[in-house]
Length: 170
Image 1 (tube, rainbow, N blue to C red):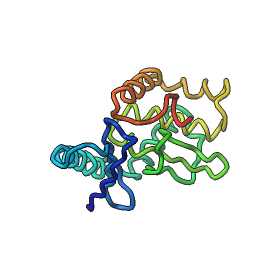
Image 2: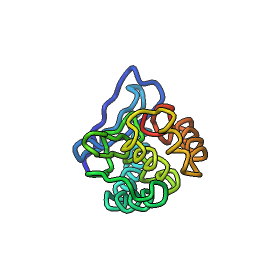
Image 3: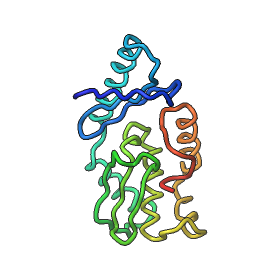
Image 4: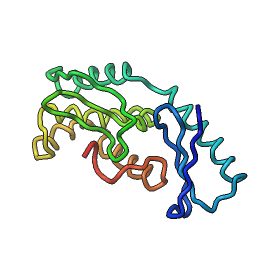
């Protein structure tokens, strides 16, 4: 994979890497030395390579079918459920009228019970497009929900998962 380094004088401390069209894009402070950056790039490359060999869309389909049976009595149908590398600000999203679900690729490296919570959250949107009382009741059927929310919030605080606060897809 090609490495593209973008330095910014506005960035003071953090170094971030992401995949953009098959290339690794590294966002770094302008004042970091080349030697220090080289070390960070090698660690970030290893992390991105590990992520690319993680779960696939077939895994999501299997989990969604299982969770549909367990928590929705098999009543739901969807057109597709896929990982998305474009989910920078969300854990997941559901397009209610198209019946499509996208899960952030970042969740593929989380424990299964955390990813399952987000899938249940998005499946519930197939019945309730908003976050009203009935929607919350549907999501609460997943017993590890509160624990998963806490885990995701902790990961965000630690900087392992750069997503805004919330409880699922938003």
